[in-house]
Amino acid sequence: MGSAEDEIRALTAELEEEKGTHALVRSEVRAAEARLAEAESSLAIREQEVGEAHLKAQELETRAGVEESEAETEAPAADGAAQEGPAEAPEAAPEAAEAAPEIAEAAPEAAEAAPEIAEAALEAAEAE
Image (cartoon, rainbow, N blue to C red; front, side, top):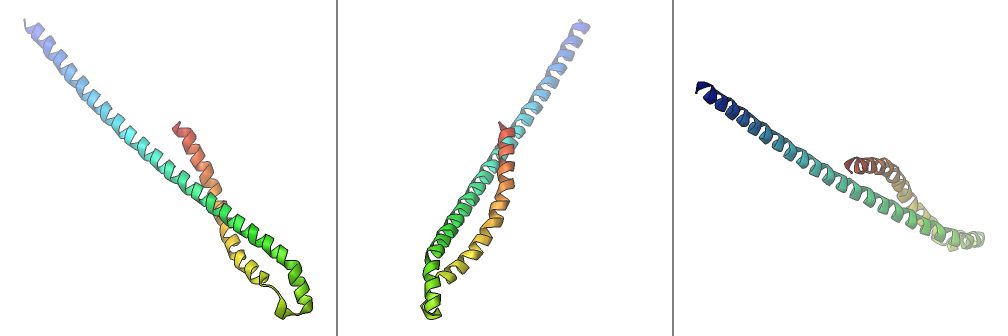
């Protein structure tokens, strides 16, 4: 009868070990799920930031294009006014001068957004 009890003890110990291993694996799975959720959240935030940067760049480009177009439209009048005298020149030059810093500011933001878009796309592809 001693060997039957020994076998039961051995099986019970093995079962307890399996339970411990199972609990450890479940814990690791929960940790991996938490890391995945955090990565997905970070990706969503980056995608939103990139989208906002693109919108701002488009807005600045559009604004700069409109101001440039207005300046081009007013340029012939300015040339005519300049021939008549500087006192009658339209205010196109100051508007163009005001747009220049915004254009210069938008260029680096657009350049910065390109790598972020590529990185976000890679992370999204890896997450899927």
